[in-house]
Amino acid sequence: MASRQDFSPASAPLVALNHGNGSSKKPILGGILIVIILVFVAGWLYFCFKRKLYANLRLYRKQKGKLDAKKMKLRRFRLEELQKATENFSQDFLIGRGSFANVYRGAFPVEGTLAIKMPHSEAYTSIEEFRNEVRLLSIVKHDNLIALVGFCEESGPKAAKILVYEYVTNGSLLDYIIGRGGRSLTWKERVKIAIGAAKGIGHLHEGISPSIIHRDLKPSNILVGEGFEAKVSDFGLVRTGPDGDESHVTSKVKGTLGYLDPAYCSSFHLSPFTDVYSFGVILLQLLTAKPALDSARATNSTSHIIDWARLSIEEGKITDILDTNLLVQGCNMEMMLKMGEIGLRCVVKVPKERPTMTQVRQELEAALKAAKEATPRDDPAVTVGGDGWEIGRTHRSSQSVVSVDGIGLERFHVDMDSVSFQSVNLRCLETSISMD
Image (tube, rainbow, N blue to C red):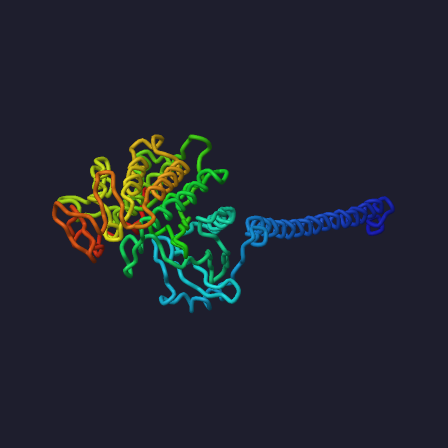
């Protein structure tokens, strides 16, 4: 009887209730499992989407800054083309060596001979810096500024950031100043180069908005074309200029010793007058064929051409400092003296007291016009300077005379040490400085 009571109807509901609880847990567990799966799938999809989106954004940003050669009217060169044109950048094709890049000559089937500027590895801090330079140079169009033909930009193991310019046949102004290969310039060619360079620099300062400051004007960066027209080159240190009469405050002073504006070095204020100072030094070099800095001119220290030439120009004794080639060839002394006076005005201590490049060009052109009108047509070798000094076949010397090919040179003493340009001090012309 006891065993029957264990299976009495009264206990049945309890057994049924227990079965009901077990079956109700299944849908709950199933629901939780489904939610977990959905969360996992959603997370995976979100991760994939975010990863793809991030990759697309990176690609978009990269393509956004990419150079559009067609839009800039430039040619995009392949590295293989440049290597073939220069025989893998052989030393035989090297035509220039600088602090930031080497320049090679290369021949191309369509464009002919071009100048290829291969920068040193540290020349650009980023690809965007290179692209900004290309964009800037693409808008610089002037007869007296070297023209950018194209560029080469490649990434990967053979990363390349190369600029390709027009090729100028007669080398640089530095070649003529130091007499490389026996080269020399007549007084008219010197004035023509000075006027052309002033036009090109003036275009950078006033013909483009915002203006551009070159920052590294020197004889090696002024190329000489077939007709002895000037071509200002090497825009590796260019900086967009300030608005109006203002100046930039830079964190670094960049340029070449001997041509650096002392006001810029001391104040870090960069303005178009910084270029005017450098151009003034170049004008003095065109007159004298001397380096900007030379220890041979000073006893205990390096002498600057400005200090060396100033007194002679101020006293009107231009013959004391004039290039010997000009004395032999004959030249217009009034024009040479005027060029020296303009050069001294370009290098005055206070930048705003210097003339603009447009004013420099206008004064040089006016002086050249006056010189042409005053020069006798029947004997261009005969010229008279402001101090009464003459060069000519009929000149009679009352002082010491050095005769060169029958031409008498009064008050002129040949000092071979001062004429020679083999001094190591010439290296200052190619030395760049960067001060933090």
